[in-house]
Image 1 (spheres, each protein chain N blue to C red):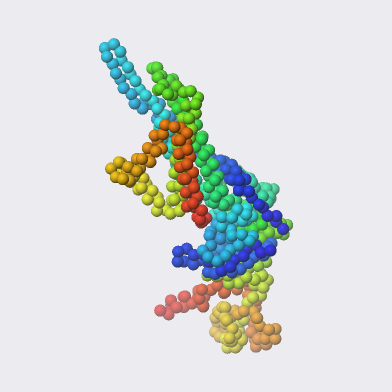
Image 2 (cartoon, chains in turn orange, brown):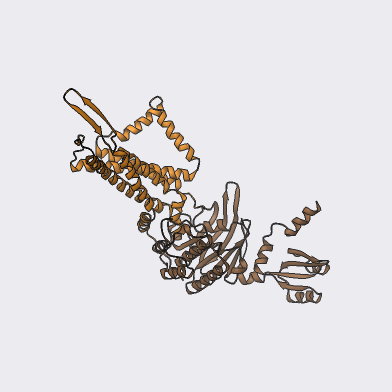
Length: 250
Length: 303
């Protein structure tokens, strides 16, 4: 007689998390590739000006690692969508899972990649500075605020992580919606474009602008974090709700 | 103990009913063959038992629990078919290790041994395996997991004859050493019938027959003789199969519930009585129409 096995959900989530960290390794290799690409595009000046009078000429160019940030955001979104696809979702079902533990371990995985992504953005910023310093003759003038006491650096990095996690939440929900019904592939981009181009003129557009404003213009980091975390949880909760009755078909 | 219990189980997609009020139960520590024609609903049934699909109505219980979204059922069962989704980034050896971490009864020694025996390299990737090698690897996963409920859905597809034979032998050996409940669906009933204790015959979404494999071997009987004699013998009986063998000579298959003396009488009339193999019985029972493929040609020629 075979002995039956009882599993604790928390233990299973942990196991699934470590399994995912190992088997989704291509997510990390694509991060490295995209960050390098971002750095490559960032070492050229993002803008600048030349001003002069008879005695003095100031040639000013500014560099930014925004490209790295943008690429990483895209990477986070795609990675989140990717792990909702059958090829990834069904791996869990071959082993031991139910839908909730599968989602929870996915969330832990996305939180981890956001953390790593955020850290890498920060390090890439430094990398860009070093490269620029190395290859240009001029003097480096860091903009105000970036002179970096430890706490503002920390806050900046943490904000980056939260943004990435938010993007992951959107990606995950998008992916799950598409898995639920393929029509969302057309509907979601249409909705997004609709919102983008209805700027300010219509009620919907105004609402959309307000939403963006709600997340991007917050001076208190504390309140910003709460807003973000709340939204992220909402996105993941919604993903669980819409997919909890989804079947495993091949 | 009853491991799988289905009552009026229905599964439909939109208006198409795949399973139609299926009722049966499967005892603990038995090997049951799930047999039926293509599209009879075998895979759907097995996937519902594994908790992959959700029943539309009726009741399905595995280990006295509803399998869909159930951790206990997931931890104590494994579903093997030729379309298992496995991570592309892991080697076969890593997949075995992962399976070992999830399935508590996993026997790594056995898994490694079988991998070696079937000449699968541990550093290969799953996506690079051929169809038959994939099936072989999946079979290894199914055997080594030693799950209390092990479900094989067409496990031998793509395997060559030698590997199929080895697989059946390995399955039987491991089952005898570590009894568990095994569901095995296959098109090749004649290959697996010696392995099976019970047969669950499914036709058109219903459980047509659920009997022991021994009973199935004796379930039907073939009668060969002159048309007139045979017609007298099988009067008022349901004819499962009829075939013309030549002028005035017919072969008829009916249910084997004749008393001894009647059989003796028929033989004295010159009727040849022969057993009907399990797999033929299943084919006759699940035939969509009277007359065989010959009929189609006969009709197309007369037009």
